[in-house]
Image 1 (cartoon, rainbow, N blue to C red):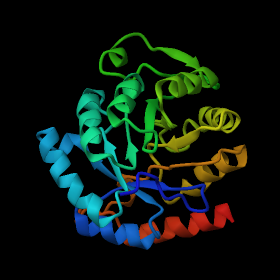
Image 2: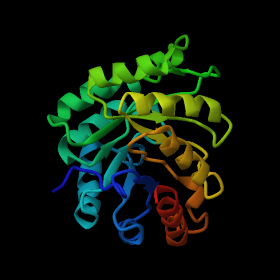
Image 3: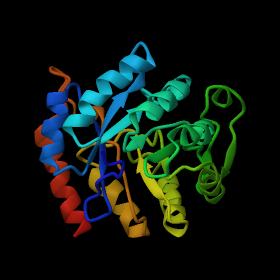
Image 4: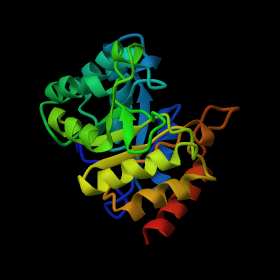
Length: 246
């Protein structure tokens, strides 16, 4: 089963939630597989239960599974790593400090492994102290260039900018996008992305020269009544992607 994520025109793949295998299948098909379906470790009582359930999803959507922390909870880092070791998914969400551990457990370089870095209020810099202990300590702030090189050292393939709060941290996001372009690194904007700002956020990254972008579009396209990610919104996002990439 493939571990390579399916990027549209080798540039864009979205990361979204699904509340069932049926929901995962319908949104996967709606965007021709240019998608990673986030399954959150926090929703499972044990690693074994998570692996068992996630394998069912994986069979139906060509392994386009993204193992998630759950609202960026750093306490979930070890569970995410251990699930990923067994599942061998296309994508893993991880805190900055746990990337090396996760890549070592995977024992291969095909799976995309991101690391959370956060806005810090200063353009050209990011907070990398996103682990379970470091997130409670004094902020660890480094330049965007240094953060990316540290991630490469640890075996990460992408940087997850979270929480970007939609367009409120846009200048910091632009700086990170420029660094990702220069250093040939995948960028994953996350937090507060919706149908209104998706195009601008994607366009900024691609115009900066980022080769691959993985926008996370979560609760804004989830039907509050059913908990399902809305197929019609996935189709709208796909049309935006086509327009921006073309």
